[in-house]
Amino acid sequence: MNFRTGETAHKLTLSAMLCLISMVFLYLIRLVPTWAEIPLMALAGIPLSGIAAEDELYLSILAYAITSIFGLGFIASFAHLAPYTLLLGLYPLIKPFLDGRRDPFFRWVLKMLFFTAAMLLIADGAAGGSLLPYLSHIPSWALIPLVYVLFIAYDYILLLFQYFYLGTVRPRL
Image (cartoon, rainbow, N blue to C red; front, side, top):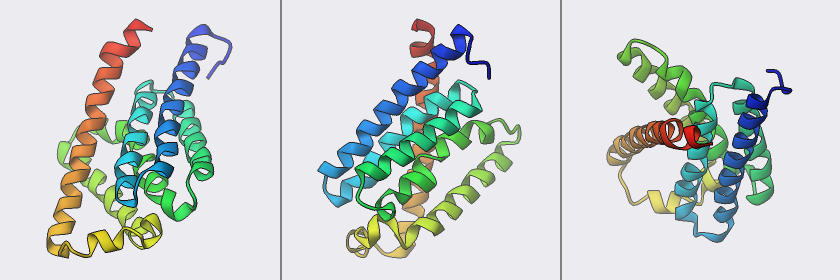
């Protein structure tokens, strides 16, 4: 990546603005009740898909690192930030590489494997265990399919944001 060209500086500036939007959502986590933390983390990950749509791997990694590090300053502990760091912030950066696969079945198998691995890492420490009282009322046979459906919806929302970013926002800047 040559940082002396105007186009690269433009992409860097756009990435910084999208990082700022993500960090605003991460800051708002301090102000909401515990049950609303995960949806706000999902919202914080959506602008990162715009950075990933720029096809600049270095900018994507830099944006993810910046939002994760500053997120630790905004959120009380790593246990509260783990869903963002391990899944909701990382997945928007991995998604374009997974979507580049030609075989849709293999693509979805890879996505579900990534999601399952991330959920196994998050399950015990998500929000420091404070989400468990909210989730204990839902039987596990209903919770597991519900979480997968929510992940597929998140994947679709990221796809819509990438189309919106590349089709509407990017050409006007």
